[in-house]
Image 1 (cartoon, rainbow, N blue to C red):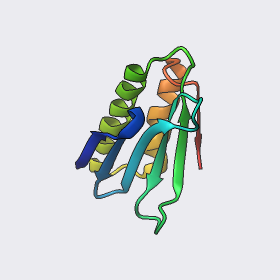
Image 2 (image 1 turned 45 degrees about the vertical axis):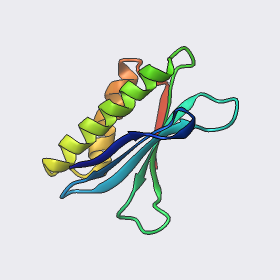
Image 3 (image 1 turned 120 degrees about the horizontal axis):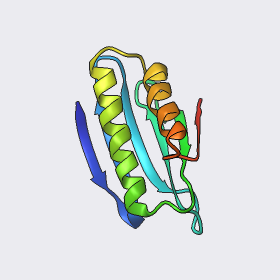
Image 4 (image 1 turned 60 degrees about the vertical axis):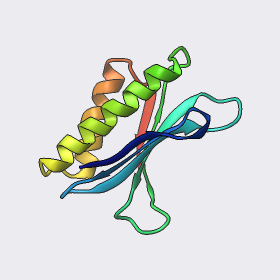
Length: 111
């Protein structure tokens, strides 16, 4: 279930997803003052502070609204896969590899 999908300060966005398979949060925010937005997936089942599961970088030409749209795509896809019983690494790989193949994201790493 998507418990939150909201905008934060300075153009950031965050989502909280709780499913039978995993509980995660997704953040899309600036890495630094002069950087564009990037996304990160955090494992809420991994203790406190939650460990990083995946990081996503975007093409520099991508607008903030386009990056927010990808954030929403990640949120919806990961929620759907978690609700269907898929484990987190497989769910991450399925969406991130697809988005990179489509050149929607620049790079990703799954930790």
